[in-house]
Length: 319
Length: 293
Image 1 (cartoon, one colour):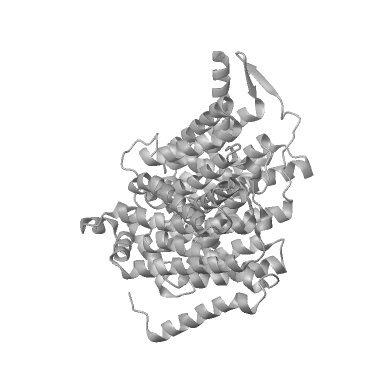
Image 2 (cartoon, rainbow over the protein chains, first blue to last red):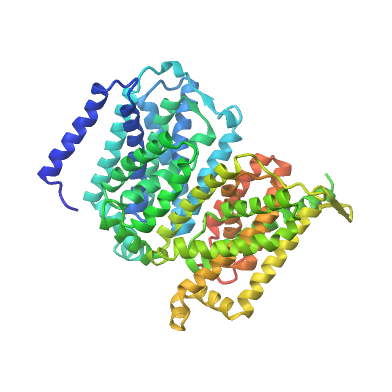
């Protein structure tokens, strides 16, 4: 709950200015830096989305990929039927809303009954159901081959870059707002001791569903943007568990339950993954698995420091 | 549509589901003392399946003989994993443990992919396609053996838990860890035992998988997910319930695969899973109503 001091404010302005300047300095058509930051921003958004549900509210969800894939499919289905256009802000907003709507729909029954592992498993099942339903969806979802979008619309990565930057800032802004408002207090109260929170008059279900829906909204937006970049929306890639696995890892490695932890984790791990992909493409996923294990064993508190350690203890206490 | 078909589907489902049951018992034991759902279980099953597959293909060892090697090896691997990976973080709660299991799954899957390649493998013995005919029902021999293995596995684990001192310690720790510690049970010891048993059962399920299915390094995740569904159906921390949950899941899949299609069968089993989680999270076969949530 500390207020941003002047030094931090100036620093964030400088970082923001640098991010805006990147596509102007580097040529987005050839430069790797622009692509790298684009991916990093998407991961920052996803990691922050997971952070809101798990880090602040204490509800471990393993279903981020469900909302990511749903957002992508809203764009793919809408665009292929010419209801929305290329990089359509309204379309992306609709994708986010669809994801948030689904989150409320499944969140109310799941969150009112389930805690801990059971909730994690339920959300994991949700992703699988969506993937399988999409494969079985016939002409509407184009089945396992997926929907091919008009890739001729693509000419530069610059708009994607700025949208991703906007999403990352949106996720940060939302998290920042939450932590400084009464809603954030309620969320943290639910995480720390749900019974006590309920006894203090907090409608715990309402706040848990709210956090879940916000995360789904952000994940849906990320999926929509990725659909505009890949141009081929198919079930295996967009409902891939990696869209949950990587953000979780980034958030935990950086420091869950903190504002800057997921940002640091996301940028650091995107760099590590890209380096690994470049240097040893065959064994890169092995390396990622090892990294998860080692970071939990030897860096349980996250890169950011002690705060995540406190979260682990809280989760332990409530379990 | 004859009654025969329904009966045949039921038998297929039961034999099919027995394998989910073996995997689910392992999950149930680990959940009992460590309070985590070990998501790398399916991947361990596939690793054991590869063990059985290579023993057969390189040395011509019969898959049912390979149980004698694969299961003890899995037990040892289980002890090793617990001591090397989980011992240190077990105290820090479920969350780091869950994530390490996640990491282990990614690591093993991709390690197998590099070492064994991504080709789909199936163990072909001379009796793989042999079927028995009983009262007009066709029963696949290898599937029947899976069922027998599941029954033996369940009976073995139940006897261990009921009759041995170590097994009683495991049960005590599952019921109430604090009281168990008061009477001198060390959490690490029971955790090691349950982990080893869980991996041993994964080894058994691995041999069962190798004899009945084609598998590749990544089929473990879906398999593990099915075991989790079986576990949720049966109720966490309940050995016989886990086997019944697996069988029920097998039957549901068998009927929905026949009346709808293979793709929809999975959708239906996940939907059943979500419905049970929503309306009866303590499981369908749970005796005590105080669910361990």
